[in-house]
Image (cartoon, rainbow, N blue to C red; front, side, top):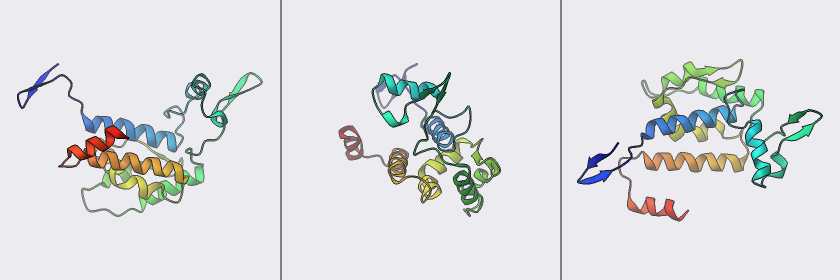
Length: 169
């Protein structure tokens, strides 16, 4: 489908809110190690062999089953509960992100069922606060960078300079 915007033909129209929700869900599920919903799967680990990267993270065959080494980005149950406790104790203005509290499952250390706007707030404003002091610094740095990109991309004023910086990176 094509659209005509400002006299120019736009062939694709990407919905940033849904893209952000998908990325947010995948990040949260991977960091919190939600079984069956996370992107750090056996197939992903086997792909590391084909790509010849991350020797320490590759799946190892032990007997007739594969064993996945611990990653620096998967949290333990106690760390996941710290994240959930932080979100449960978070005070925000009315209507800002109150629904995030309903998505926290403290017993399992999971966050499930965030709506688009909650993912938007989480990715832009709460990502750093939620995982600071819990995550490895290198992983946290990547999450902060991703959060900053989304914040710039969703701002009211996106300048050509910012787009040029992204292109160079």
